[in-house]
Length: 196
Ligand code: IMP
Image (cartoon, rainbow, N blue to C red; front, side, top):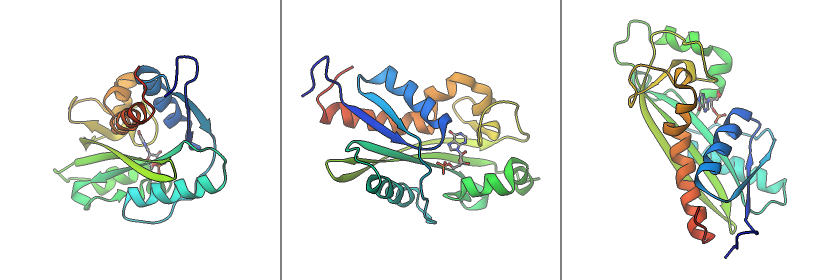
């Protein structure tokens, strides 16, 4: 049990500052647990499952640090008419064919449904805990001006018109990451007997 002056610190390991900024904001809103950032490039295995990718990265990370409360996050965009591609290969595809390449693959395709998924792997008392968040949406017809990664082409169903990028700060109140981080925080608050 932690008292008001002694709050636990949980470390997020990632080289992606966008992710850290979003997750930090959610922590500030939802918990007294402090978030630390370990800026590290994680080794990602090739696997069809984001859970496996995240769990592997976490174990690699734990091997290289003395932090006992640490998590990683892996995201993927699953496009329905491409049978879930790029999914776990989202980073590679963004770096190779890019957003224009994705739009070309969907040229004249009416079904633009897709799912953005965030998977968190947390090391807690030597066990790996997985938390997942998903948002249903569709791929835009063109690239919008704002946002990072796939934000300029992903339109969440709950808005239906604007991309994650165009939603600005509101993205972080509805995103796949917001849902996964919410589950992580609920778990930590319960396990560490904390309330906001
Ligand atoms: P990662 O493997 O979790 O780093 O993410 C896979 C790919 O999706 C990378 O190219 C990221 O830039 C991108 N990505 C991850 N999360 C988001 C997001 O919230 N918005 C837009 N792109 C994202």
